[in-house]
Image (cartoon, rainbow, N blue to C red; front, side, top):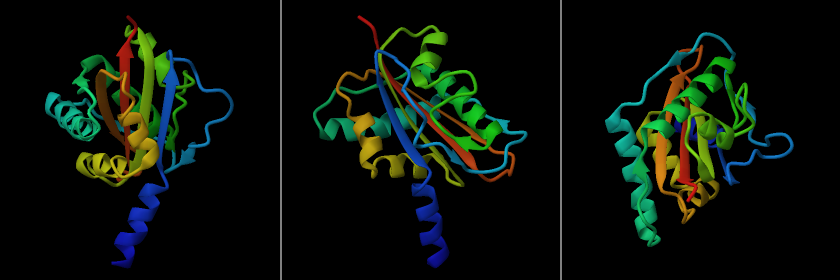
Length: 178
């Protein structure tokens, strides 16, 4: 019981949320920047259609309770999320800042998606997708991203850190520019 509680506390300590209007980069340093494991060779995973669907379904359940329209699973956002998860895993660092980007907005734009708004939830820990989605649904900062009314599209990605145990997660939410 104690080890489960400590694991849960450690996991919650490495959850972070970020939202950006117009896909702009956040200013200053990232307060959610956490060295979760040693840098090194990561296992970068492709998000399956069913994983992206499951993430969208969990997001939409939360959105429906607030009377918001659903988000659609988006393969471009899924690819962006998976690439960021891989980047975090290679660096062993959970952060919204990528190796070559300041946040989710620039990554989404570089992939060819023209956003009016972007948001990102990230996590690092030894947990599967169901646990990550459940934890995000219990965290006010993450729920705030899930409940941004303008969001229309969604993608999730994961990678395994060099230690072989720590999973790095990124979920990207966006709405296209009209």
